[in-house]
Image: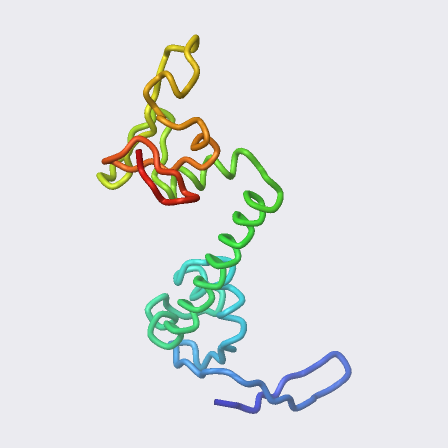
Length: 163
């Protein structure tokens, strides 16, 4: 809704047209611009904070601008994820790679997972034996192309034959 507002400027009166949504309050009408609400939602301001900014209740903000609030907050989450991905993958930040591994892949420092479908990699403390003698693989050519599952110790990815 557009509404014409009259106001006094330093050098006289001027009529301006401002686009927004008019909300009735005890003190009169408040014209709220949807773009301003979106801007504040992108900063993850609460409904209460946005309402206080405009001089209306948090319920009014939620009622009249719910879709705008959701869109702004989703955009922020998207940009945060995009920045985290860039930091981890493109910039190779070790801390972010570890954090994403723990949160997205359910990896942990102790090698255990809450998920049943992610089995920990096999482990050996016998450092004197070559890896193929430790019972982890049967074919040394498979070492660079490992794929572990619950039922097999090694799959050769190149010819898809499991040992």
